[in-house]
Figure 1: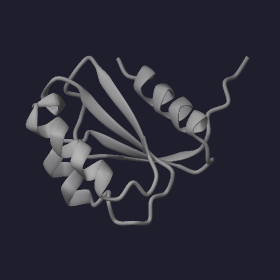
Figure 2 (figure 1 turned 45 degrees about the vertical axis):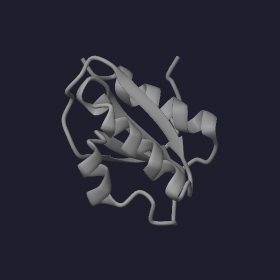
Figure 3 (figure 1 turned 60 degrees about the vertical axis):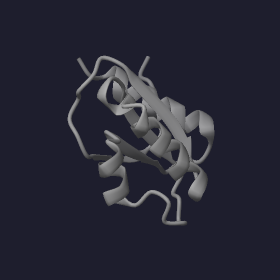
Length: 99
């Protein structure tokens, strides 16, 4: 049986660096997500865990590409089929396809 995977756009800033991945769903989180991502960077988390943002199409500017690169975010998946479950399905599908 073929799996149905919700449609998403994928933008990778860095190649695979770690064996572990952190998937973070977002949608217009504003300053909250920037604070949390800065906390992850301060603890050097991007050096040991690849961070993927699962975004539902934020339009508030909180996920500026230069900011994400500075933090060390590996990639962002922009989900076209709304819903947190669809975001996680897409994210799990993407990271589980890697070797």
